[in-house]
Length: 118
Image (cartoon, rainbow, N blue to C red):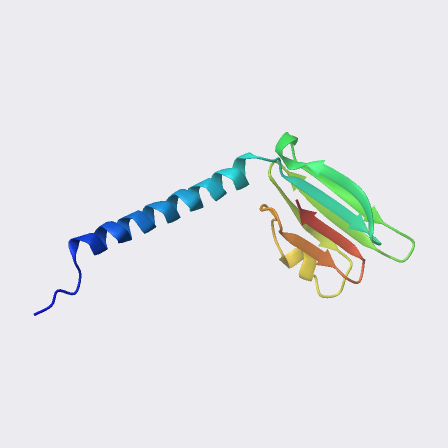
């Protein structure tokens, strides 16, 4: 009867797993320790604020108001940001919750506000 696995198969599998774990660890370390986290706030496709979230010592609220009835409040604190309130009807931007990771975003289409983490 033929064996299903041989000793060398386990060695090859262990080497493949080790290389994969080293690669994933390298990506994780690079992603988390190379750059600071920045929140970018745009209104009407114009960047109005760029804040380094790693240097915030206390919570702050940013207000966006214009003549068209737009009223958006954005809360930023150490390492994260969120849309606290908005005058839009669906509140999708508010329901996005806290933005903490690079690539996270909250968009309020009626008020033309974008909050994203870089």
